[in-house]
Length: 192
Image (cartoon, rainbow, N blue to C red; front, side, top):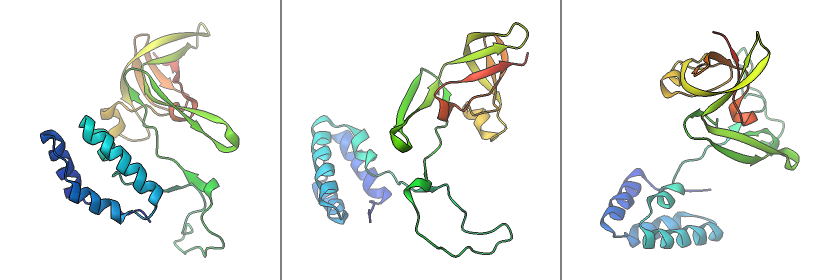
């Protein structure tokens, strides 16, 4: 079981980075809370590297809370009755956090899928492959902003692209037909 430090210790580490000091007692206490020696060695090694470079990223990287996403049968039926577990949680039912693709300089991530297959996740997208229904031709268009997103109204404000999103491009408005977090690209159909 992984025991995570409190928010206060992360803030303390952050403040000490700015001053160039490292609170050894606080960090060693957090290391002793870890169970696996391999994890302890990795954190200690990265901690030393951070201490020399005064880098904030590696400090906070190990202290983020991770939660498993299950994509199997739910715990309850549609009427609210609880299913009785007949087996444990399987790795094949494990999901991942959403990509939440947004607008900016292109950044993608390659993920190993089941059977060793590779999946490209588009984290940040700048261009869309837009098809014009009249001329039946594809054009590469720059994405300017998100106009509407049926997945969530908050995605409009954050410029997050999902399937079904209406985007503003330099060729006009278009509706996204691909899944950027699964396909690694943005395909869209011109609607105006």
